[in-house]
Structure formats: C-alpha cells, structure tokens
Image (cartoon, rainbow, N blue to C red; front, top):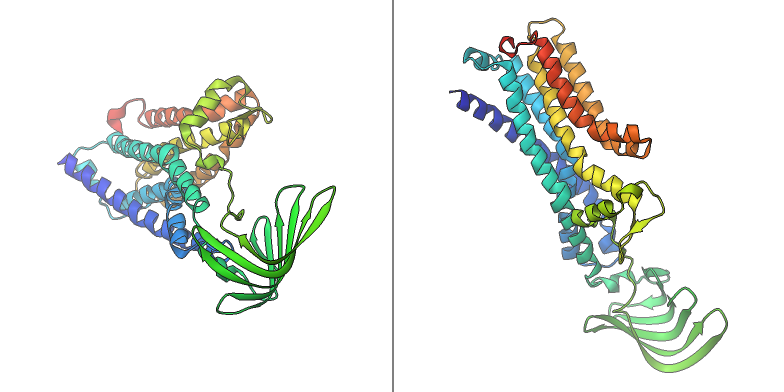
Length: 376
C-alpha cells in the first residue's frame, strides 16, 4: 500500500514537472528563435539550417530551467496534498514524516543525475553540434542578401554595393570590397555583372571593370573585360571559434587536473585549436558539477511544508517563507561560482556548501523530533 501511495506522489510530481518544463522551455525557445532569425536574414542560411540550429539549443534551455521547475513542481504538489488533506493518507498508513522527506530526497537524486547528464554530456555535445552544423552550412539565401543601392555586408570581410539588381540576377554599378587579411584589401568595380549558381556556392560574372589590390606598402590596378568572382569561399559572419559551453567535459576536467594549482590563473590557457583561460575552465566545471547539487537542497526545503500543520495560523506565512528561501537559493546557486575566486576558505565553503546544507538540514529535522526520528 505504501508503495502505491509513494508511486502516486512521484507520478504527480513528474507530470507537473514535465508539463511546466516543456511549457516554459517552449516559450523561451520561441522567443530565442525570433532572435536567431538573423541566421536567415543576415547570414543567408536556409530555413532548414535555422530550424535545426535552434532545435539543438533546446537541451541547453531545458537544463537551465530544471532547478527552477523542479522546485516549483515539488512545492506546488506537496502544498496541494497538504491543502486537500491528501497528505493524511500517508500518516494514516503509518508513513512517518522522515520517510516522506527521505522519499523526496531520493526523487531529487534522480533529477540530480539527470541534470548532471545534461550539463556534462548532452548540452556541450548539442551546442558543439549546432555550431559545427551552422559553420559548415552553405549560404543558400545569398541572392536575397544583395539589395539595390545598399552596402550589403555579406560576410565578415565582404561588402557588396549594386546600383541595380533585377529578378534575373543581372547587376549594374557593382562595387565589391574584400578584406583578404589584416594588411591586404581587394576592391572590384564593374559596370555590370550576373549572379550565377556554381557547384558548392554562388559566383559573379563581372564585365568591364577594374580590380585594385591594396596593402600597406603599395597598390596596383588591373583592368578586365570579364572575370569570375567566386563567393563560395567567403568568410561568413558565423563565428569559427568554439565557446567554452561547447567543449566536452572530459577535456575541461583534464585541463583542470593538469593545472589544478593554477586553476585561478587569469592568464594561463589550456588547449591548442581552441584555448581557454584556466580561470574560465574552473568556473565552467563548477557550473556543470556543483550547481546541479542544489536540486537536492531545494527538494529538502520543499519537503518542509509538511512539518507544520495546515491548522497552524502561521502556515501560509511559513510556506511563503519556504518559497522565498528556495527562490534565493536558486539565485545563490547561479552566482555561487563567483565565490571560488576569493580566498581558499571561501572557495572550499562554496564547494562544500551543498553537502553542508544537507547535513544541517537533517540535523535540524533531528532536533525537531527531539533527537528521536520515531516521533516525527
């Protein structure tokens, strides 16, 4: 019987969590999707690329919300059980409050493992996959990026201006400025041209113009009757470097392990192709490993709803206090990584705080039971 009661509680918590998480994640994903539309409008990628890229961001959004939605789910479900007197079913069947609290703690461990799987494995993988997919995608909407009588910044190093541009992709009055490297620039001016499809990208067939190459020391001009200008290899606006949240956890942990004594160094870097400051690596590992533990803390705080009877006149104030406490712990968990860069004592305290809190919580419960759990 007790297993059925706890199973019902677990089912209610899980359903509420899934509904709230999916709803909030979807809302944020849609809002973020609007901000990502420049992938199509400015960078010229196809809608398929846009949808796949934005979909790969869902695990990151979901993982950011788990701590909050799990706390809300527990708090709402337990409060509803208490307000509807459903909680009495537990006590009538001989289930002690400490058993109820321990069950909530066990549920939180399951969600903790799920969150660690997301932050350590799934989120870095999907974030890296999204960026690689975007970086390797062709600029399918390039023709729509060119506008009449406007300087169109097609890529980081390419600017195109045309006087006229018709539906057949014929151009007149063409100005192209390409920054080849830090010291060299190429400028092409042509009276007319035509945009053509080429294997692997687009190209321009330009007629009656000049090419000017400019570097720090000299410049020279070259006239042409007709020339081809390939756009397939242009330097797009898509960033080429990986961000720290896109790097797999194994690499970051190895870096931190190899240079642990210099973990707070803000000059030493680790990595070859994509190097990162050790200070930033330490911060990222803290976020991935330590922050999820606050799920257990929030679960224990939510379980305290059952400690006071609903007949107590201060019950509403008590629940409000618990909710505010949980809310501030969520904020603290998101900012706690900043503490690791203070003194060693503060760093150790910030690392041990989740474990210390859990110990103090059960010590508080022990006191409430007059040092005898059977009276709880």
